[in-house]
Length: 245
Image (cartoon, rainbow, N blue to C red; front, side, top):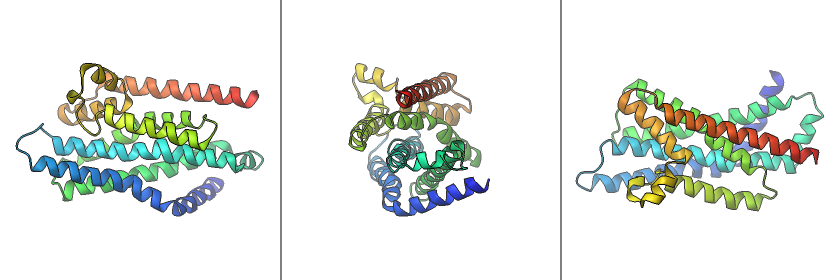
């Protein structure tokens, strides 16, 4: 326990050094939400629950930034600096190391949720029962495991430059085609078919079913579970093969 607390303190110091990045990862989705929701307010009519659904989309967009950019970048940096190798020859268990990383990411998630949810409620007047707020936050955290799995796959790439390029393509593709920026019904049929196969779309379907029907979307839940399990397994297999070669 003491070793894990010490690792968490290290994570806190590293976070302080990257405070500008974290401000951008939360500030950009919040700015997008304010801008696009402002346009909607000025237009007559529109889809029901737009403010609420777009609030959830931008929260997921913010959390996706942490999972696809920050998380794999930190792991890659630790590998380049031989920090992981040093820990393997110390009393620190690698499980404690990864738990500290996950703990740091959970803090980032909570900050994203609190900031975007607060802006949506106090600035745009989004109103939901407390149980709906809490349930949506929990589903966002659990569902974002799929994005973490994608981030781990990125750590297999050989260079940080390639990680950045592929990460940006994934980030924008998941946001646009997955319907986080705009409804996928605006796209051609073939683009809609692609969008429905993406974890970002399935996460939003999970949230909408919970809020609109007070139930669990089993197909979206199964998709996210299988998607995450396959990527985690693939990453573990390729990482072990890479280390043994």
